[in-house]
Image (cartoon, rainbow, N blue to C red; front, top):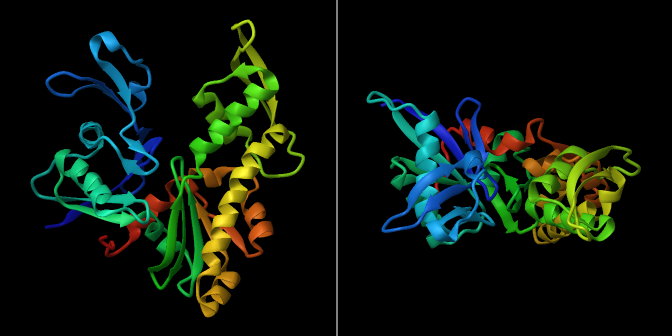
Length: 319
């Protein structure tokens, strides 16, 4: 039976589904009511419109944290809703679900991903490490890949479609957003939402020197509690952003220090391939080229690079 392949990337912040192109990108969130059983009220972006209410036992839940499914029941309800929205039911065509997972997960953590999808209605499930999604785009002789996501960053050395070495670290978009919010609080004496911090990172976040971009955001004054608008310059955000990306460089350096010298020569020649939502920041390729001292290139569509690559793989590698 012919099968239709759908790649599902369940991130800490967003869940995406890919099939011949992106068909869904929603917040990894569910608004639920607890009782004898968990009742789903809203999922994805709609769930973010609701607020916790202890009286009705209603709460907003993020079922994935740091690349790990922490609430499998909620994850399955959320996925079932997403699948119903974008995957047509058919009796004549099989459905194959490819789940992108972080490198180095334990058996129980892998089982949580698989169970979430099976309970959402699909049994043909393959778990594939995210870094393998970049195999179609990198040099087979050996290349470093870095996927900077919202909940974690994946760093690996790939050669001949295999993972030579890999690690997952908690340096990510969410962590950078927290640093930006902390910076705004210290400098402007104002509090901004997580969404506002993310918007600053995505719109004016930059690793270039002297970037003159700026952006106006809404904030709450810490002294008089009033809402006010503040102007933030890209240059002023460089320190909290740069410090996070420098940590990624340090981890990548340590990873390269442990690979065979012949493979290291290939990596030095072929460089690093960058992907993930965090690779959209201005100046990343130049930043990595400067600090890793190897060629660097960003995927032309970094946010969907992993899903696009996993969709193209002829035989996904089960893990």
